Image (tube, rainbow, N blue to C red):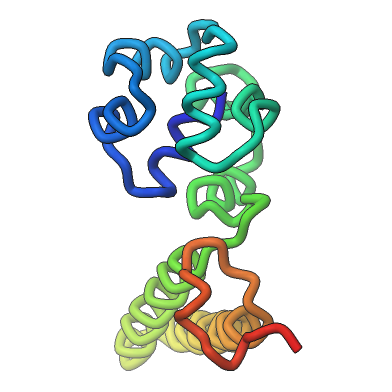
Amino acid sequence: MILKQLRLSRRLSQEQLAQMSGLNVRTIQRIESGHKASVESLKCLAAVLEVDISTLEQETFVIDKHSNNWEHLPLWLKCCFSLNLLAAQPERKTVRRILMASHICGFSFCLLGLVSEAALAGGLIMLSNAYLFQLLMFQGDRLGIWFDLPESAAPWMSPS
């Protein structure tokens, strides 16, 4: 169930959700840990979270980092998952994190470029990557694709 994701996206604690829905905190904990919920509990939670019951019954898919499948993934794909790039809902904070890492690494390698030409080349590549992600963030802001920003964050993105 995606109850925990919905609860966290609304910045609610389990106690707050229990109080708002009229359910016991233990019931919320059981549902979030994967136990089956009654129809009445689902109705209460759906009303509080303003979603359909079918939305609450959706399953979440998580890669088990200890499984053999994870171990056999290429390194670049593991990095993408770790950086949250393959999320179905793009988040601005993820792009911002990559942007900052690219700048820090780029400037560090450029400083090492005083000693090694290869480090200078790597630094320039990392800085280019940072500026490409800056363009991506600008486009994301312009188009309003981020799932982690409130709609009031970018007034120029109002629907026409």
